[in-house]
Length: 95
Length: 494
Image (cartoon, rainbow over all chains, first blue to last red; front, side, top):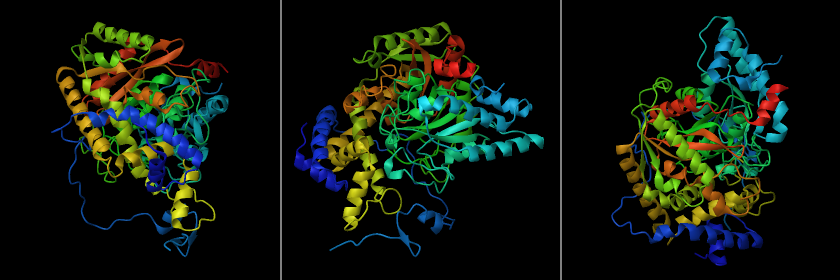
């Protein structure tokens, strides 16, 4: 199945990836090739077959609702690219 | 004469330390000596951690001095795939986006290995974020197969496989989402197991596809594989999908043989176009070996698995695209310089940080999950998964163990498949159905073709690891293949 350049750009926006024009062209070609291999799945008649999300089912795993230690602020910030006053520093967002 | 670690198994190392024939410190030194000798050619490691290994060795040697009972992996040099967190190490996933990431907590399976007395020698190279079957997709350069340095070791846990094969360490851990333990195990002639989904906690391994990922061991022998499973299995409150079952000793039945065991050769998978006839012949010979040992050998078909590869290349990337959304340049990892706003920061940090295969999988998964395509791809793939599970259930009603090749070919040359993603994906055609069904499987060496190892895959029903290991151990004793690559043999002579 062929995927258009416009679709590649749309998916890249959804995936938050700023691609170069060259990457868009390459991915259009590669994704079309891969989708050709996987699209036979969509043609299968699987009416009435239950989907499986987990092969070894576990349900409602809970623990007592008691406070326990988590990551310290120091550890949480240890890999921060930029930080200030004990918080992650980010550029402005919104208009 | 310096200690040659590659001649010893994990229990032999432990016992030699307990008997005061060697010290744990000497075991650590021996690992680094072998690494010095071969690592320039192999490149199995992203990082070496001699301070951590020496500290762990000192603890074991203090226990010996105090006359204490040693834990099962005491003094055994080990290494971990570089997607497993260990405080005091970087966890890079062989990605530029995490190149400087410092672990802030321990992966449960890693912690359990260390609690069992193992010495952490280093972190092993891998395909970036475990996306690949050759370890060529590493931001830090490929790992080379110890059997032939011009060839790939398989992937994505290629560093973990090569480190054991080359005798650099005794046991390693890898992770397996579609074959990433078993396929490199096959290509390097090591014993490589993916346990049942939920056997081993996934806490602290960087997530690829959460419904498929599982941690497991590489070793030279089946006994070491069983001992390592003993150490790492079990319920973990930090992973809700880990399964609560009574502890098992996976070494207990290793010597019981296969008399009466029902072994099924998966005929339709064996006959797949693309399977090297020489590999196929080795698997058929292995089936004959099982018959000669008293197993009841028959044939079975798994027709739904013909859609395993396409289902996997929807489910895997879909889950990966969601899991990798966390790498956004805000809390950790690469951050693009001089971003105009947060959106610009996200988009450039990710595009700069991820390598080509990661971008490919994120794009594929995002597409499969996007509006209008979800039902046609992800929904259908989940139904295919159900059909594959039913196929296995039918097969395991008649058989205890199923046999296929682990990989359709022996190790291919570096660069051979790098430009063709679809050809690369085909190298996991035998391993992928196992992850989709959540069952356990182990790859064991079953011979050489043109001087390169062939892997035999043994698959079992959920939680049938003991049966698989018993069959693997019987085969190992009967065949006694020498799984030492020439490079390691040469290093042992020095």
